[in-house]
Image 1 (cartoon, helix red, strand yellow):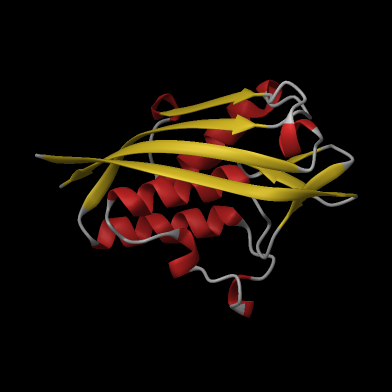
Image 2 (cartoon, one colour):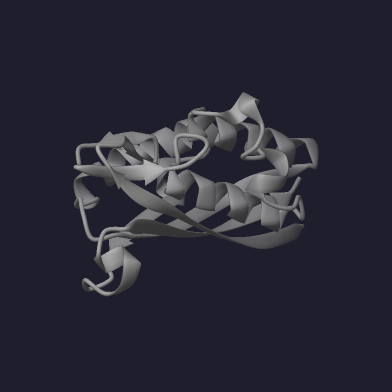
Length: 159
């Protein structure tokens, strides 16, 4: 049995009157994440963790932000494509542990839906997906609501 661990990180700028999609959930807020795709910081961090664990480089290598094919695309699709890459290399996903860092909105009420979206996209149990959130205590770019950050770790196994 070969087990590997991956780590992912992502950050996106927040802009006024822009959609804020996190974990495949559209959050009601006066600001939203800006990026080439739907800028889902949580799913991007998870993709990077999975790709890194399988030694498949990073999300930017596979889904370039200069490629019009990925412009405005749902990050759920990017996550599904990432899982296909892992499957082709002979890996299955054990679990994911993720952390969001933002001042607002509150994430806790949305975590079950995020877990469900991720579980459905990658084919593992909701019990194998942990999502947590914290603030930056009003410090730095996160505290000023200029950006949002996500971290993720994962465990994969060669089958």
